[in-house]
Amino acid sequence: MSKTIQGAASGKPVEVMQRNAQRRITLTLNGRKRSGHCEPRELLSDFLRHELGATGTHVGCEHGVCGACTVRVDGVAARSCLMLAVQAEDRDIDTVEGLAPAGELGDLQEAFRRHHALQCGFCTAGILMSCADYLARVPEPNEAQVRDMLSGHLCRCTGYTPIVAAVLDVARSRAASGAGSRTASRAASRMASDTRAREDAIGGATRQEARDA
Ligand code: FES
Ligand code: FES
Image (cartoon, rainbow, N blue to C red; front, side, top):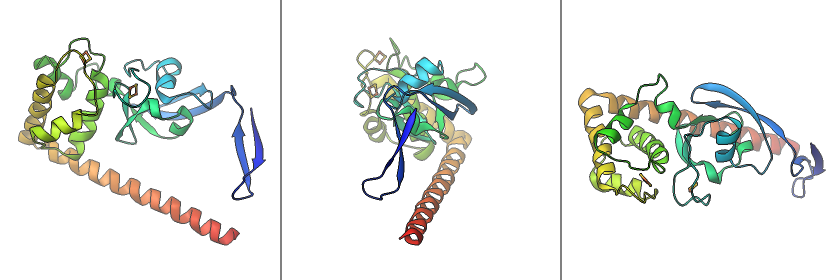
């Protein structure tokens, strides 16, 4: 259920969802269109886990601190506990399940296994998603850069040394095969196209406002 009120600033009608109202949203999860119902206040992390069954995404602090819930939103790493499910409507969401679509571990996951870069695994899904995003943008990082990127994640049992080693190992392998630069160029062109789309949307809205004024 929702009701329409007059916007305080614009004076235009604004749709307001009622507390406890259920809304159906559709998004693309790991390349597949998925739909489900959520309350307006429901976190994306809870929606992924409880409504769509994507339990690979873990929830720790629910305050944006630990990084366990990290997913990619339109290709960029984001805390799913800091985002409402309704904000994910029509967006591309990637979770750790998407790193092994055919049931075989991806290169990051293989490297984590090889380097013993996890113990309980609670932090691992989020770390993998941040690494996937980071290596797409920075294909050949040095150790300091990897440690800086990992500073957004709390791992309470493994220790960071093997995690850093696994990430650097993947970066080296991708560079040797040329995969890193291809991924980086795809990431750059996707970000450029996202930026153009956002600018077009902002420009369109501004032109509309100018016409309405
Ligand atoms: S659960 Fe989201 S950052 Fe900790
Ligand atoms: S592997 Fe246990 S918290 Fe990181």
